[in-house]
Image 1 (cartoon, rainbow over the protein chains, first blue to last red):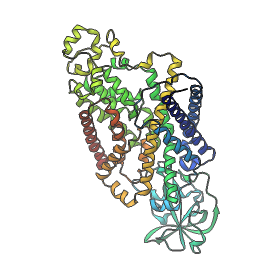
Image 2 (image 1 turned 90 degrees about the vertical axis):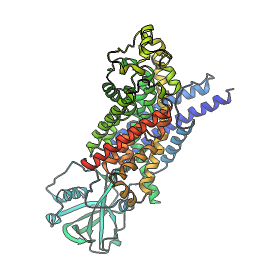
Image 3 (image 1 turned 180 degrees about the vertical axis):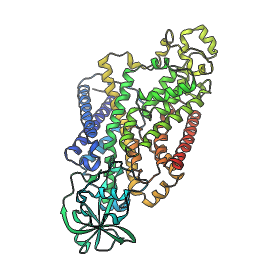
Image 4 (image 1 turned 60 degrees about the horizontal axis):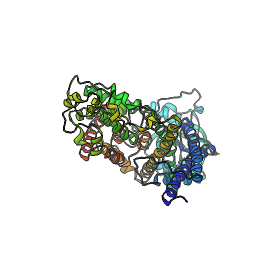
Length: 254
Length: 344
């Protein structure tokens, strides 16, 4: 019979292995279900996949070790280590969070977060400033984010009056705009969901905005006009049509 | 309900982004533990305090470990005869000045590359300055924990010169305490010194390869659960702060030239997040805090924080840690304030 001390040491080993395996599975699951796009910039998804595979591998190797140790009566290996947590706490925390993550579905940020963070058609000083800039000949090929970037380079709204626009995003009903306006917004991501920030353009509607619910994704086709709304002279899309679309697989623009 | 989902989405996004870098950091630190002999490196260190501090600060490029892994390494370096300048330089700079942290910071702040380079530059500068300050203390032992001081040299009651004359091979064990003040005194690492050094050197190096690999995996598991736990706590704090604190309050604090720096330094100290992943944490404040304050977080956090004070106490006495803390904090504050005032 193993002594009580070795039983608890063995339990800690199992906890370690399960925590590592659970994290590997969690990373791979976020990838396989496509929800990783809600969490990360597409450029860095491969890092999470690689880490998932490595963790499953490491966990697998250690699992075999622990199974062997459990069956044999060999003394458990003693490794000296400086610990911040009491024994078992680190692994227990990791395991608990991974199990929670396995049944949690991350959702892309929507209007509430956008309103909290402030939707603008400008990139303020403290925003990270993207260096890439796409110039399109056909203005209707410009995405919402392209329009906002163009505006940041040359903010005079009159310069764009009459240009055709076809943009996609989700609807926000901002209090400072009248009832026949909504803001079409998108989140821009640089690295992970923590740094996403919203950008948006006001859309002038033919009817009340209540027809177009908040957080629903739309494709808006129309023409650019200059108007003074919400006390600001700004570029507005005069809509010709609003089409409901489903949330894109990759909800953030970059 | 929506807010709760935002907090959790943020939380998992930070963790999913940080986990690969944590894994990489843990892998390198474990490889280092099993396969690298620091004594050869110490042999090549110049005697000049400035150069030694600079070299010590740069060897993070060879030993890329975060602030949790570097305290044991710094202890081994000290005990094996590294000069105080080198050991302190390494202790303060290695968590930041290394390729993994550079890559992680680049990943997070690729739109503000100046932050990435300033982070490395400031960390080097502060580490070298503090390293040089400590090198003026001829005998570091009064500042070290008794166990470490005892492990250093067996020269109590002897002057260094006597000792070297009596036992030339033991040079290795004395260098950390007195050699910097003596120009031209050679640092010897061969001969009889090795025998004594073996007591404190890396015991893993002597083991056969399969054993080393197995121990390496064990060490990875240990560091992962330890640092993973801290990462989880840090990510939880970051995501709750980001959603729970009213935006106006954060903005008024984060846009002040001085308040923003102080706030981020306190946050860095409290959160104690690992340097391989702290850039992702800082990223969540990138839209509301000044560049200088983000830099303060990235420079100061890895040098000294709540978590590694416990680790530092395994090497230094409280007084020495207070000196390091005050010097590093003041230098970080002044340098990042300059960034706020003149750069950004």
